Length: 422
Ligand code: EPZ
Image 1 (tube, protein in one colour):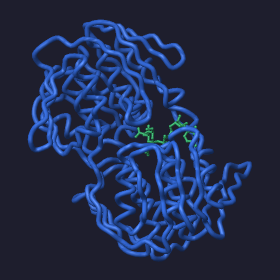
Image 2: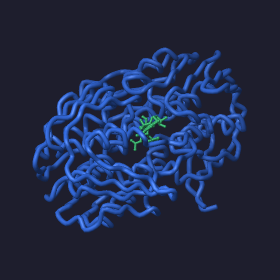
Image 3: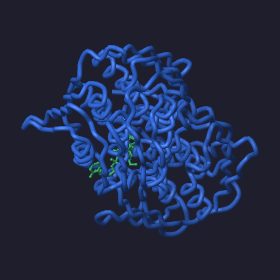
């Protein structure tokens, strides 16, 4: 198994460019199933998750051309020869459930194994089913966990989501785009990735209004054509490198960013005393090399609240600042797996249900730790960059699912990190 060896590094300095958003490119690739013409996706990040979804789309009969050197993926779904997603691929990537909506819209049928839970929670998908059933789909789950969905015809409906689920919003939007009539989706997720998906689909000829708000209106159309689209920058990678500047007390110029997508992170880092300068060209400079940083409190919420995906990297920072901090994780029921890994490094953290209190400590010490999920893995690397000595991070496949060229980008900023075969 591969692992990272991370050594105490000085303040990170230099420039880093953000890749295309993992959580935007995945639903956009699934939406390419809605058309029988070429969909060209630019700034597609070279990630394992993108590879897995390319393979899944090919098993369904799509023709996929991947040029991840130039970050371009071209998908043509003219001939969908299968509506069955393989359990091997679904097990590798939960987001495979996102092909259900498009398959129902295009073929009136989908057979997909229930995506399993993962380290951060059991990840149910009943809200996806609630919305698709409201559109007229018959959905049954076998005792072996195979989901069989059928729909003679999808018809527009008024749907209310009990929780603004990102995936459910995306699946419903894709299915409703070719349903008969109008769908109103209330309490919809408002993440920038939803807006990017809607923009992509509207370029295909869909009629979606309100994406980015809690009420989305989708007017069904007969067919969708191909298009070209450039994926938005990854706001979670952006936040991760903002935190890399903060935790190492460095100064990093971050390019290819959408500052509006990371407003909560900017606000919270400024509360800690980090200086964040917006440049005229849209890039940002994150500067933490002048004054001591202090504590703050974080509560994760659906967008536009503080993103749950940056809770663990931010907690790594909070273990190193002066003062006590509090964290509340409201989105996932079990997203503190990184706490015991940080404690191995000397972090002073106590958790109680969804709350955590962190007592800032002067020094973390290197240890052998594990990446328990994608974002927790990034948190361990950040901690390793400032801990005394050496930190070994195992299970790094989690990290490499979601961060393109992560080692190269950290090294490019002066971070001492290397990838080794165990
Ligand atoms: C997306 O997951 C992201 N993944 C996650 O990023 C992100 O953490 C999450 O949204 C929240 O922002 C992708 O976009 C591929 P949800 P998703 O449905 O769609 C509960 C990363 O690190 N829920 O909004 O699965 C669920 O259990 C990953 O990049 C239901 O109860 O998230 C969770 O507690 C991690 N029933 C909460 O809602 C449902 O039917 C948020 O889930 C669906 C969700």
